[in-house]
Image (cartoon, rainbow, N blue to C red; front, top):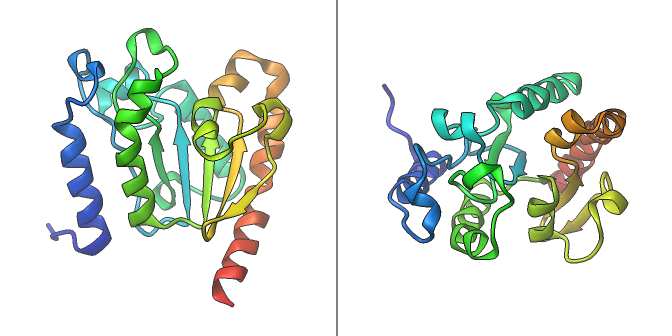
Length: 195
């Protein structure tokens, strides 16, 4: 077994801190923390809302039905989850899969900021309203989904959460169309980064 170096080691150190975290009440009901998964050198970082029951059980992000759809969407654009980093706004499951409370987001925000600083992705894809609100100060997801925002050496692409497409069939084609924009946007960002 190889010892992680550099950025991978930094991500593991952050994950260890998350494992010991007691900054909010969510730690009391968790089975596992869900710090995130993927390579430290990922060009794309996906951010969801928070872990669900299956993620809490596995300690990995997006392993339930939403994760299966995310995998399918990634495959549809020629990507696989082993080349992207996937995490959530909060790292512990909220009771009943409710939306994160402001204090919970605040408690976890430092971890997410540090993950972003280590990975330095070209593209941050926010999945759902809670993740979008951390990066986009104005607008409703129904109005701005699929429209990239540029700044801080990266782009942010707000998208609907895959769960929205599972519960509202009318959104399935919208979600797929938004995902279809990712390869072209990523190519543009790589071009910019190389000049």
